[in-house]
Length: 115
Length: 111
Image (cartoon, rainbow over all chains, first blue to last red; front, top):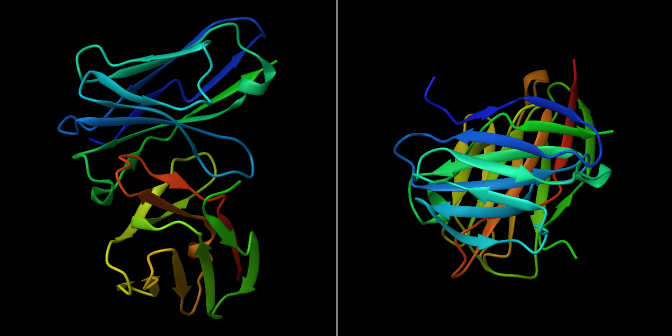
């Protein structure tokens, strides 16, 4: 399977703990995106990378959130000092080019529950 | 304020019926995409429309992009239980490299 992989699929953490998620995009895709989805909502944009460069961050992304794509391949999203409001599905997607119409391939997501 | 409004939010119909769901905005988009999402999974791309007035067909699904590039519709003919899911429209604004999503239409086809 050469799709987008996300790990872990599920994460339960206590409030105040740090968590890190990993995304492995399709290998030939140079664009990588992170979205967050809560119940009853569509995915909300968080940030995206062109190779290793982080080109845009949403205002939704507080200082507790940081994302990296160190070698232009896999990416990590870290949330520090988690809060209950961080509970959501975190989705990663990749695309082959800079034009949106080339379409995004999403992973299955990481479901975070903060208790 | 939601940039892309989808309607209806929920739709439950009998197998074999036809249906249309809508995606509307006051903004102009360079392209619009439709995705289907099943519970616990990521969205899966169905189609991209890029030209105003464009119509694309995917088996029993027909997608249309409005002439003014502000809206889109998805029509399903003879719906089947396998069509059940969350249908999301997503658009790219001009000079923007990311797509933004509507809230989706949750479709349930009753056997």
